[in-house]
Length: 358
Image (cartoon, rainbow, N blue to C red; front, side, top):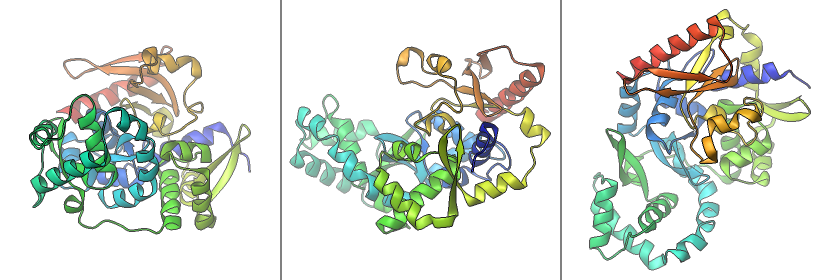
């Protein structure tokens, strides 16, 4: 079956809870998207809030503090917000490849099994009983215990212990989080068999990001095509594919039905979204061509430095960037002049952002 590019973009906006019904809470957003890129803590908090009915930074922080959302490295070596109950089975699929990929760097840092074992024993003893520790204090703890954290050793110790399910980021303090023991912080983890886990991974990705290609999914998870095929075999009729511009995209049956059953409203046609840097709407895909013209990529990542600017999205396409002024107001930078209708929509989105910060 073939479809139009406009149909693909509309389904993506619905999947991301940007158009149509917003989610009722930040936890519901993470449940839908499964993982939200979160190396920039402030941007990631806004990415959750903007997809809810009443965007509130305080509510995002409250749900992090309650342990319903956790922050860790479930895939691609990048920090993400994920549903607390899902982190364990995600790591079970991805951590072996992630850890193996860092072997050379660990050798260069002179980090070996004895260092990781000593670091684990020290932090476990310090945190048992529901305690938490900030990053600086953890570095001091390890140094006092004879484990050097010089250079990037401290980061790689935390990363490794997070990969093997010992640590995750927990309670918040302003713009930072403290580390906790994962098995104490998440008391009701889900356990999935490998085929079931691959199916869950793929379905949840498509539910919150679809339509998308298998290559998009493999890139997003840093998994394998074989894993994706195992997921497809389990999912059966729960997902289907269609073709746009000669490319096969996969979508959940639920999302396809929702898009087909809901006519495009005027509010949806006129909507303009201010999304944070590193937002999943742009970063959640290997191929970003459907939403961003290649000639504008340097405006999103100036100088190719890996830092993604906040984006303006209209009609499903990235039409500019924006930045926060010191007073909390928004300074938009559209690629081309905005129509009066879109400018009013930007102003409304900017006011919503100001309220989010309040």
